[in-house]
Image (cartoon, rainbow, N blue to C red; front, side, top):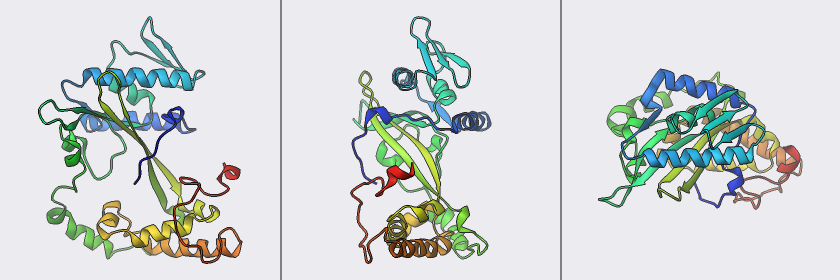
Length: 277
């Protein structure tokens, strides 16, 4: 993982699945409540500032889809045909109902000086629970899963020995999280927002260099990292496919013979990606 400067115009993006994603997120909250959305006392101003920043961005970036009446406080979602009063409604609920991304708000602790998680709307977390992270500083949030060795290792080892031979490579998807960090100017809170993107790995067959790069990552990653990412049950199908596609790309002249894996000049894209969009 690496950090790079982000063009602010691409902070929040809408996709063709917008309505479906919003409905899924609302259902998750209905089913799980505070496991999806939660806030600690003292985070109110930061939540409000974030909402106002998001609303201003959406209305400027997508004026045909969102409108804001700052006099009345009404935020209009023209895609869904809904309106929300940002002065009276809970800011995190408005984010949940209108933005298909997760938001984690961290604030500086007055005693320790460390940034701790104080508020969040999170529907995409895997391997951790919001209630386990609330109120914790960043270094504790990123600690390994508690009691992994005692409670999970046996099950994980057993699953590694039960790879499914009937698994088809067309059923394998790569999850990539689009993650951003930004500081709120007034409250000085730091907001971490992200959304999960899923790409069928079969798509990489037609993306130069990608199969060879992904195969190297899978082979060279530490075992603990692969366990955390749960790749053990798909590698037996994915690696042979990636190797085959990499060889095909060399035969077609898309990739030079014997090309040594490295970060592409076009990163995070690949050569010729503009012609395939």
